[in-house]
Structures are given as structure tokens and as C-alpha cells.
Length: 532
Image (cartoon, rainbow, N blue to C red; front, side):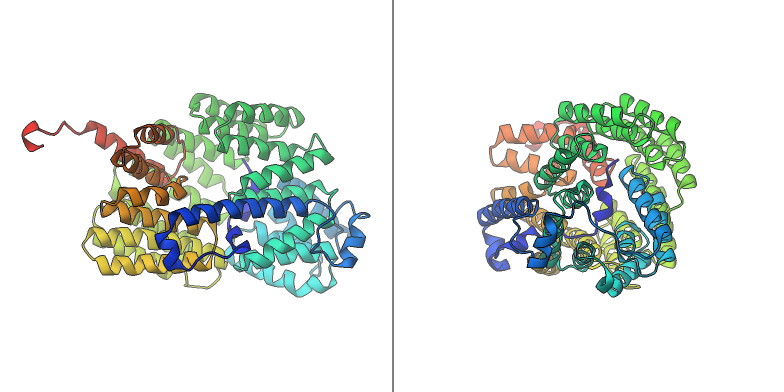
């Protein structure tokens, strides 16, 4: 398990560092977008490297003066108990006891309502949208009494969650520069970067934390995941060996072993490590979910449902329970029992609506649309999903916009399939406008994937290829890219992409649908010669 999930609601718009062309030019210039993306990666990387040293020029003089002397971020609280609760929560956070960490920061905030850092960490870590919003607002209200470093952390958290990425990344850089000797600051920043796919930059910061403390176990854990994302499983497992040796009595090293082995397709070994984690701590619920996810990928959906049920029964966090129930619903999709999948997901959407979990409500409705056989029904579900995003206005701007991007992409495709070309283009235009104003990587990938899908549907596979190449984290996009390469004569690329798709072991609906489509294609009888 890796902790970057707590930063999933922050945008990845590093593109904001440079000027992109107007959306009309972007739509017709895929090579320009590729150059822009490369420049963005370079600029973000250089920005993070600069921020990791005390020569960061953006810092005010007072902050520069404190850089050399301050080794770690000071905490501003009048309560010794609140400070202790905060520090214990941070330790739990780094050991991946995330629910326990949230409880700790909540208790610290209650003990000292002026303790700004505790509210900032609660805003980052809480999965209750209302609690996260109120914690974020309170952190801003009491920030004036906080230390300079805490103020930067609050500005970072608040602005990125509110969709103002440029100010947020500047605050993060200043925070890093202010505390070049604080391994925890490097670690938290690296987590955020991993959450927005800034893997190269995260790799650099994790190594900076290990320069401070070569045995800093949380950094080794995240490095292992970065290697696994690059399919460097040998290096990933070497990092895991060091991580596990440092924490032999903790469950997360075994949990991370399990997940990385599952990513590598070594399912039986993954199950062994998940069970080892649960033997250390039976309440470490991510390992219980890991068992379920692995059985689902192995094709044993009944056993997967049994394991998901255990995780759901043991989970104290409502948002996590909704997530696990949606994972369970996907097992019915894998079995093509769409009626039961609909029943489960509809129930989740209703309950999430009643409890003000707008994101989970929208996700359940959108997933029903993803596998729906009837295009009109899918469009109606997507309309309901978009409506769900504005029921209570508790969602952060970044969460709302990311989910809206998924909805718009699916709507454009479904409308085109039922011959409503104008309405399809209108949805694509809305997605283009969203992508033009928000450089969140999830939104950018949705835009590119949608543009590629529309071009492929019109037979323009040459134009589709560069768009689809920008969305290769999506298994369904990979499947379409396999065909696009083949249609354009790039047989080697088609075969390599097909192999990558075959080796993608994600317990997601997109993976389930892509795998099902591939099986259906293989099982189809050869076309009669007379029909060719």
C-alpha cells in the first residue's frame, strides 16, 4: 500500500507553468501537445529540484534566513497533548494506518482548535467530503498564528484542492526549500507527486529523504511502487526487501509486497503476502481488499465477493466502504451478470446520495453507464452522474472536475454511437474547455482519450494514435490503441501494446471491460470467406 491516495483530489496541471495554445490549435496539433507535455515534465522537474535546495529564489528574505537553521517544520500549538497526538498521527500515516492517522489529527484539532497544521493534515487525509472542506476552511482561518512553514503547507493544501494549482505548487516548492533537512516534508511532497503521476519528480524527492536517513522506510516503500509502475519489478522487490527488513513487525511491507506481486501477475505469491500482513494485524483492511482484488483478477469472482464482504464488514470509513462495494459490483460485470451489477451500483448511488458522498454517487452511476448495452440508457445515467456532482457542493473543485471529465468522455462516445453527432461534439467541446482551463492530468488524459476515440470512430486512425498515446493508463484506451497501430501499419507497436495490455493487472472496471472485449474477439468464429 502506498499513501499517495490521500492526495488524489489535487490537480496535476504542471502545464500551468507554460502557455499552451488555444484549444482550437490544441485540437489540431498533437505534436505540439507532445512537445508541451515534454516541456512541462522538464519544467516541473527543474522546479522541484530547485525547491529541494536552500537556493530557492521565490522565498522571502525572512524565510531564507530560517532555511539553514530549521531542520524540520515547527508545529504551532499551545497544547502538549495536541502536539503528541499530531506526531503520533504522522507516524501512523507513514506506517499506512491511514484511518488511525485521521482519527489522531481529528483529536489533535479538537484538543487545540488553533492548531492549523492538524486541520491541514485532516483536510488532506479525510475521505468525508464535508469534513475535508470544513477542515480546509478552518486551517485557512487560523493560519495567521502558524509558523511560516505551516502557512506554506496550508496554502499548498488549500489552493490545490480548490483548483488553483499554480499557487499551490509554488507554496509546495517554498515549503520544501525551507526545510531541506526534513525527510517528512520530502516524503509528503513525493506522495502528492505520485498521486498526480509526477513519478520522476517524486523519485528525486524520495532519494533526497534517503540522503537524510538511508533507513527511512516510508521512502523505500514509495520507491518500490515507482519501480513497479515502470514495470521494473526486480528493482521494486529489492526496495521491498529493504523496507520489510526495517519493519518486520508491521503489516504494510507485506501488503506492499502483495500489491507489487499482483501488478507483476504473480497472483499466488501476492495472496501469500496479503495473508502474512493480516496475520500481523487482522484489522489491516487494505490487505483484505488486496485478497479480494487478486481473486477477482484470477477469475474467481465468487471468492472475491466473499473477501470483499469481509473488508466491507470490517471497514470503519464510509467512503472506503462505498469503494469496496463498487469493487464487489465489478465482479458481477466480469461474469456478465449486468442485472446484479446494476442492482448493487444503484443501491450504492442511492445510499451515497443520502449521506452526501457526491463523488461515490457519481462514480456508481457513471460505472453503470460504462458497461450498459443500451446507449440511450447509458446517456441517461451519465446525466444523473453529472447532476450528482453538485448536490451539496462539498466536493473539492479538483474531485468534481476529474469526475466530470470521465462523464463527458463517456457521453461523447455514447452519443456518437446513437447517431447524435452534434450532441456528441457538444460534450467533446465541454471536455475540451475543461481541459484547456485545468491541467489536471486525469482531465488531460480524458480529453486525449476522448479525442482519439472520436477520431478512430470516424476511421481516422492516423490522427487517433497520438491522442490515444496520451491516455495509456486506461486499459480500454490501450485496447483501442492496439487496433489503431494495426490499422496504420505499426505492427510492432500493436503487438507490444497488446502485450502491455495483457500484462496489466488492475482491479478496475476498465480492465474488466477491456479483458472481456479481448476474450470475446478471440472466441468469435472466423468470418466466412463469402462474406469477405
